[in-house]
Length: 313
Image 1 (tube, rainbow, N blue to C red):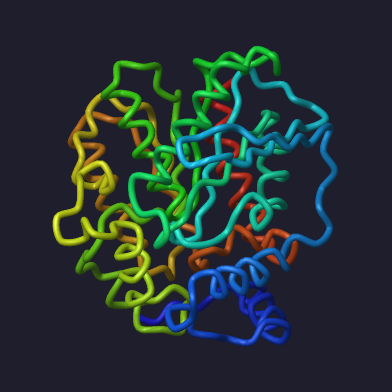
Image 2 (image 1 turned 45 degrees about the vertical axis):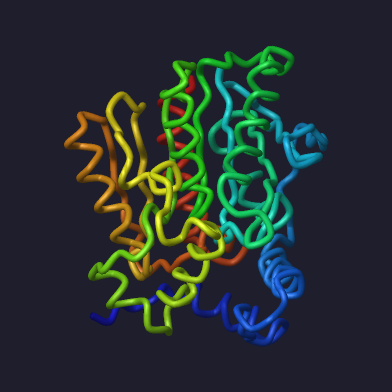
């Protein structure tokens, strides 16, 4: 089925393409492909919204130092905060590529937001990224009161691979008997490999951005040697979802992984978990990083902020 893409998204992608010609990231050495992908993503960050404060930290994780950035809006009114995990196929992107989006989300939610880097695949397959996210969360939880925040009123959020990590981290905390987030905002997430879905067939061949082939490649990198028998911890769609907090599922209409979220919604409802699914019409995978140029992206960040505010006030 053909879906018309939002005109501003098309224009933004065309402008980006004039500065960053297309390339096959799967054919390049990981470091080179990652650098080129990050540069193209960070291009959307011009005109950064001003914040009340931005802090940079280096915290210790199992694999070395982890970069963590803290955004404090001028009007930080929420009692809880946001822990955000960036997307990029567990392969690319970082706190810089998502900088503009993070600032808007902090502003619109009135919340202090913590954005973290984690080790990337294929050099560091699962569970390296998830372990780094846990280390970052441990650091935040211990220091939340320094920011006048209640560590028991945090929301987890993430886009794409970051949505997978945010949900997996919430499940890990639940299984460990620890305090879980008050809600999870999962934005065009990828929740299981090899899904034969309508959205993968409709949008995965090309023309909409993320292809099914590239998504499979991301999954292979992330799972590494365990790709033939992947652990359930890496695949939230196969996990026990009972007892999780409320979930907001944001779906880009024209996205290969759109049905990942719809399948997860079914699983969440069957497990008795409160869940809301919002479809952004004409949107493609990754569009939330286009807030400088695309009104739909700014509106979508507002949708996410609204959901999070209800959890953390």
